[in-house]
Length: 189
Image 1 (cartoon, one colour):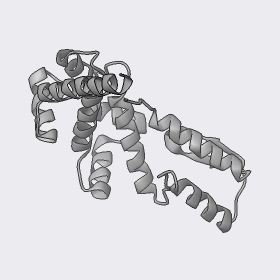
Image 2: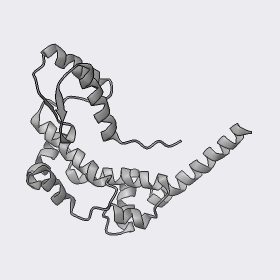
Image 3: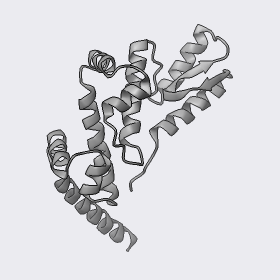
C-alpha cells in the first residue's frame, strides 16, 4: 500500500492542536511561523517544545536557521507544486523570500554545509521517484514538470543521486507491484 500525505498540512494540524491544548492565543503565518498574541512562561515554552518534539517538529531559536528552513520550505513548495514552474529556482527563491539569491545561497551553505542547488536536486529526485511510483506520467512529462532540459538530464541526476536510472527504478517498482499483487492474491485465496 502506498500512502500520500501532505507534510505541511500534517505539521500545521499538529501545531494547531498543541497550541490549543496549551490554551495559547496565536496566529499561524507562512512557513511555519507562529505569532503569539500574549507572552507565555518558560515552563509553557518548555512543555510546548517537548510536545512538538514527539512529532519531529522543533522550535527554531536562531534567525539564520529559521531563514534556512524557509529556503527549504520554498524549494519543497516549488518542486512539489502541482503545475510546472518554468522560472529559474534562484529567481523564484529570492523573490519569494525577498532577499538576494547570493545572500540566501551563502547562508544556506554556511548553515547546512551543502548548496541550495544540491538540495534542489535531491528534492527533484524525490519528486521524480514519487511521480514514477504513481505511474501516471512518462519520463518526458516528469522531466518537463521538474524543469529539466531533457530526459537525459533528469536521468543523469537521478543516477548520480540514487545509483540507478529512472528507467531501472520504474522496472523495480513494476516488479514490486506485481509481487505485491501476487502476495495479495495468495492471501485472498
